[in-house]
Each structure stands twice: as C-alpha cells, then as structure tokens.
Image (cartoon, rainbow, N blue to C red; front, side, top):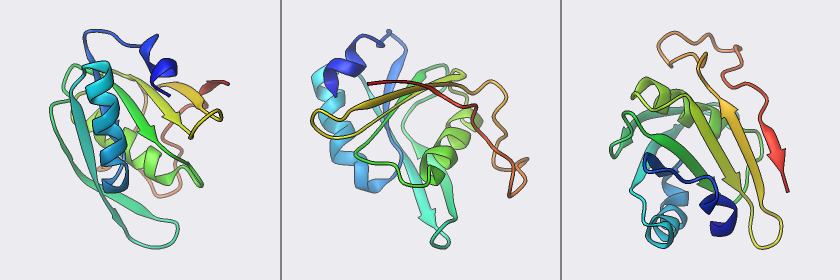
Length: 133
C-alpha cells in the first residue's frame, strides 16, 4: 500500500487512521512515508451508524490520506471525511484500503462535504471516488 500512496504525497499530506483500529497501520505508513499522522476518534452508535467525536493531530490546511485494511459500509470513512473537512483539511481526500495485492485507491473531492453539524442523517457526504487497482 505504501507504493500506492507514495505517488500521491505532497508536502501537505497527512496519514489518517479513520478509527482506533487503524492507528498501527497509519503509524507504519507515517514512518515509511515520513508524514505526520492524525486519528479520527470514532464512536459506533449502532451496527450502521458511527460518529467521529474529533480528530487527534494537525489536519488544518493538509491533504488527508485515510488508510484502512477494509471498508464494508463506508460509514466510518464518510464520518472521518466529514470530521476532517470540519477540522479544516484540504478538500481532496484520498482513501486507500486493502491488504497485500488487493489495494484499492480512491480520491474524493470533498469540497461540498457537509460537516457533522449540518449533515442530515441520510445525506451522502462524499462524491463517488475514482478508484484504481
């Protein structure tokens, strides 16, 4: 996954764990790629609903690269992206997930992402990302 991420890095990139379960992964990529990390403090409200209570780390004016091993519903990524936008990150958010040879890369322009305070429960928060394998 580091190779997939490396070509997208800029001086403003920050590696983001979308929840506590991805912190070790984010730390490894932060070290390998020499970039700072941030962590989304996520709480699961139900089987399908999550809330990010805050972002730990400096993301203001930075280009987030969210890393995770898998995505099932996308709710965690969506909540993390909304919290990152609310915290002042740049609007282009890259999402990388997968293990081994099955790495998927998605780039979403989140300029119109609704922040958690303004979001309605059923409103989509991310544009459909472009994906590469």
